[in-house]
Every structure is written in C-alpha cells, then in structure tokens.
Length: 186
Image 1: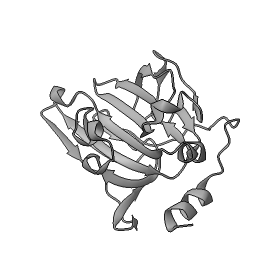
Image 2: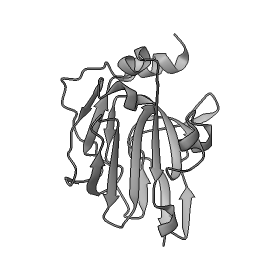
Image 3: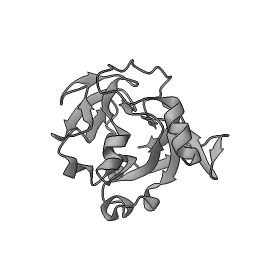
C-alpha cells in the first residue's frame, strides 16, 4: 500500500449508508472552496482529454482523501447527473461550479455513488452534495480524481488560482475541505 492509500484509509472507511455531516468553514462570495480534502493537481495533469484541455472550465483536480463532496460555496444546485458522479452549483454571485468525480465514471451508471441533493436545492457552503465509494470506482477500472472547475470563466475578468498548503505530499499541496481554491474578479 503506497503512502496516498494509507492516508486515504486513515481518514475514512467507505459506507454508503452513513449520512454525512455538513462541513463548516468561512466563505467569501467571490471564492470557490475545496469540496473535498486531498492532493491538489492542475487541470492540465488530469488524465482526461476534455478536462485537461480546459473545455469544462478553469480549476483544479484533487486526488481525494475522503468520499463525500461538499458544496464549495453558497448557491443553488443547477444539475446532478443521473449517474450521480457530477454536480453543478450556481453560486449566489453567478459562479458556475462543476464538480466531477472520477475519470470515465459515467460508465459506472451510478454504482458506487449516492446523491444527497437534487437540482434546484439551495445549499450553503459545506452542505454534503454526493458521496462515492473509491474502492468501487477503482474496481471498475477508473480513477477517482475529483475535478473542480468554474465552467463560466468568460464571465470574469480574472480567476486567481489561490490553493496553497504548508503540507505537501509528493511535492504537491494537500488541501482540506473549505480551503480556498479559486477567486473570481468581475
């Protein structure tokens, strides 16, 4: 078992029956926060041509440590895929955030995913959105990388990538739920 797997297993034991508790963190209206803890990577490093090319938007990938995705800001759930592997949030300030769990996990047809919200639900930062079972994803032959992007970058004059950490794993920052990732400017 490598270091990342040891860290993952020390933080959680996957169970689809447990209802996750909300996370609590301070927010600013112009900022998108980490929806899950894990090791941060650039979007360009994600092993998916559509995501890495920036077609879905501007943001980060997170190698997850945990199994629950939390709302990265206050807003409204704009979409939840029928396979429960992706969720969109329209923040109160007009930021469209897309959170996608895994690479090619749409092929799993919802197995290993549980949604906690529906489209048009109003959420606050830290509200549980969906949970997933990393072992189910891996046994299906997929990567459990979580992608967090602003899917309407053209609506802003600048998007600053602000994710940073004093804790490094393999030379990459380890972020926790609620750490700032992206700051927008109109």
